[in-house]
Length: 291
Length: 148
Image (cartoon, rainbow over all chains, first blue to last red):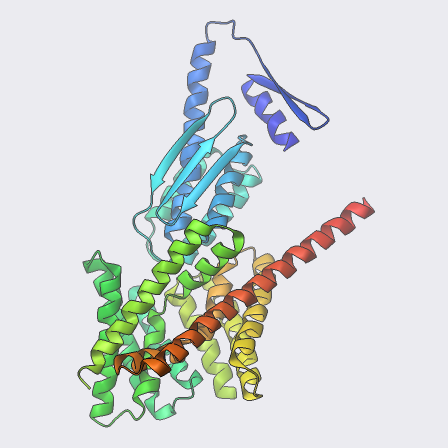
């Protein structure tokens, strides 16, 4: 903390920080030259830049599935590395409030409306925050790097994700004591369900409906395979094929947030996970109507 | 047993792809998932309550994730998620749902309660690992301070 305050004063020359025991005494230099007004303007711009960098980093992390404590911690660390040791961040799954204290108190709010899962971006922002902390980046540089990350596409191609869901379904079937003869049918049902989910996510605003339809497809496919006689155990096929739809990240993050004391985020993520699970259950139950 | 090892490794790594984890971490994701699942599997095979087994393996998953996160300097979530996924009580919640659909509420509510217990067990495992991590950190810090 001490270093941060001292470097801050050296750069800007507005006030000095003395550390006397535990007390921090702020001394403001009396403005007496004419150019001081302009300087203040420049400072304001610089502070806005820092806030923008913090908010962008927070937004990317939050909308790609990082836990709340990581988002808040990263934002405060970035601000501290740029010389604003006194900052506060409050983030919920749907928005972030960030404020700087000190000589130029300012706060901004950013709304996060779209959420997806891309842990690669979270890792990238994390490493950028590390290099900011070791003072290797200016705010402008960091901002352009973050913008690049935000605009970048998903880490894996679409077919790769569908193939992963395809394989995962079969593997889960074996893990839940299914038979190898059902392996391929669970794979196909899971792959169909997951592709359905990806497609409907783009088409619809309502996420839970996409999950409902996807699990309905999984159920119908499994019932069809058992009906024509190629699959033997309906239950294990459905359980395996439905696993790629399970909101695993939400469950983990909800638990982690609650543990860390971020009650608002934890509860709302838990509700999100619960609704998703309910949608999946409803989809499977709807498929049973056709049984 | 071998089939369980291989399938749990592949399933966890595949989940890593679904969650877009960096390519360099995929192997570790699979490893965490495999170890967590094998611990659970062996405990359940030896007639240990599935709630205790889930808690133990969630704990182990979290400890290994913490190690990997420190070692590879990546967010811990990446490893945690892939390790937790196999422990999610998918089969039991499916059965609960099935009983709800046929109006067999007596069995369905029992199963749903157990699903909640298992979810709580996962959370408890994570909490224990977190607490242990903090204790270790504090202990190390104190040791450094005493030396300095």
